[in-house]
Length: 171
Image 1: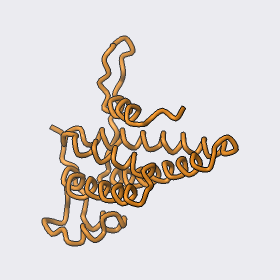
Image 2: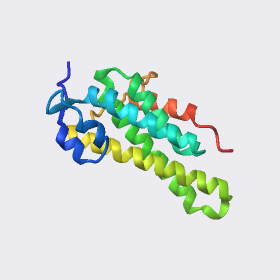
Image 3: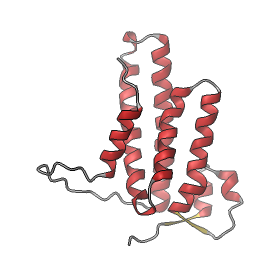
Image 4: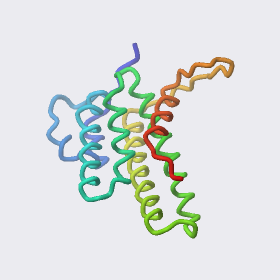
């Protein structure tokens, strides 16, 4: 079994994420990653996503809903892999949408706004995940893929495939 990842609550408070909620966390001076994820990160992402949807900005909420779902549905021993997988998805979304914004002469006003909102949400998610990675001193485990194997055993592959299915084709 993997070693339990702990971070100091005061260090997490200093990041500004979940500031008010963590201030009242008095169970101990440290918090483990699964508790942070289930008690703070998932509700935070769900709340932010809901506010975007209520304000008529569904493009901002897509990746946040996706991240909340994957962090909620994953077992504790796969949580670190999921965090790194979601970070890669966020980086890919930032890259894709920033490239589209760069070629803005080919996009209409709605598409420009959509790309900008998607990029901003992915950036926000990425910053949150990077903050968690740093606070918990998480290390990504590199899995060597055997190209001759037909099965995929990477959590990132599963998350990426799920993300591709959840995103509507743009054409």
